[in-house]
Length: 390
Ligand SMILES: Cc1ncc(COP(=O)(O)O)c(C=O)c1O
Image (cartoon, rainbow, N blue to C red; front, side, top):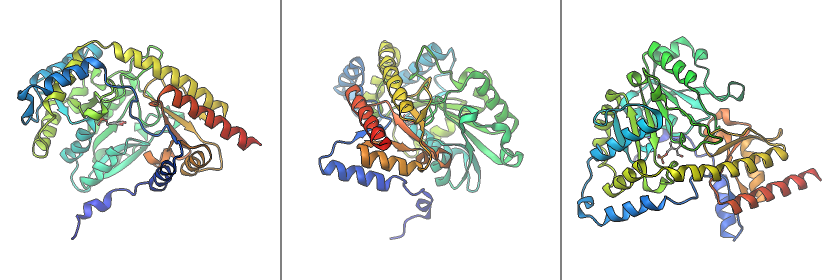
């Protein structure tokens, strides 16, 4: 058997050893507290599940769905964007439901990137931007996100030759893994840059609703010219604790949406209709659960950031997202420090290098674990630190 060489382009999985260790510990009955996974611990709100159950009983929803999604869902997305961001979208041409935003993020690279072509990709960043570029035969050109620049890419530092050749610019705010946010002035700059260099923007925005202290992250689509050159990926995963149901959307430039639709329609058969109905309920129903969740995440954020700083890991309070990006002590690599916490404290975190080479020197901790587990995790980190001091 000979597999396609394309698969050789997949980067080696950095966490093989760490994951083996976690599995081994669990098999031995050890209790590992994981801050490593960005998957909400809170359940999908009841009214959404109620709608899903009702829809599951309706035989009309047992058949193949349309790849384009239910028109009612596209309208619900457009309405939601209007209510939340004041953005007007044509539900027929500027909205495309996705089987989770990851699916669309992965597929859109194939709509833009021919072999040898370049995508501008943040480092550290959600790995799918670079991996899908590689699978499409392209080359990621990494834009370092550094603390001194508030984890925003310095677009002016991109060499002219690269900017001219690039086809896509990937952005992601609120950001995974750094928890950084972007303001409208940055989006305006990015749109100007993209228009100047004739490239398309893909803004990945699944965390706009996970925000604290009254802050409301903006959408790229609030920039009037954004629709000429870009799409935004969004998701119900984090907003409504629906990661397991797999539903998200792309909105924006009609030509980009159509390209993604044409690609997808040849590969998948859409989102199960009962899940689309549940999504309509989520988008059009009460949004109170978002406020309640954010109150919980904010409390966890405050506790964890304080504890990390107390033990000498420099961490900023993120304004949005459920990630804490913490600087590790000198003398360790990210992987070594992650291993140390796992070995000595039975606490799992993610090494920054899992998101790119610029993630060296950091670890990422997620706030998506129940309060008692978070408290226990903090106690273990404190104990580890005290033992280290002796
Ligand atoms: C930055 C970012 N984009 C996209 C996704 C994918 O989300 P989903 O496919 O569940 O919509 C994630 C998931 O963790 C993420 O962190």
